[in-house]
Image (tube, rainbow, N blue to C red):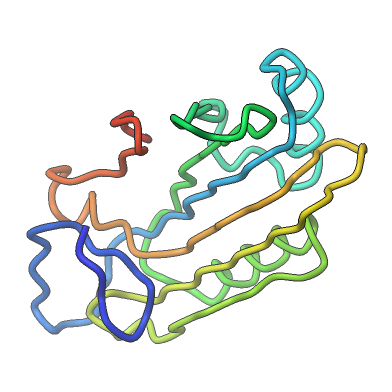
Length: 169
């Protein structure tokens, strides 16, 4: 994906913009690192505690667990893609912000809240802490993006993939 200047938003390779406002569907990409060295504990303790705070952004499909090469064995990365139907509305942003702040009290946020932009509205939120404590979920780092669903806009010709090559749906 090519980087767009001015905002950290990544666009799919080959995405052609017409200059018209983006009117397609939106999505929220969740990428969360949890301090846990045991997959069973991740599934039985940390993920249920996380979902008690933010719900199931994956829509019941479950979190994708990615094991990254050369990563800290005490960190587990989970990702989910939340589909939002229809063109951008301010309710997307309100629900997004409420969910973020149920997870943590402080976030670094960058945003383009212009739904008439050819790449749509875009919000990137980042949270990190060194010591999550012993209480579940032990979230160390989270990157959450609300953005236009370019996969749908390109007729399914593009998509989101993890570093391992695994497709997120």
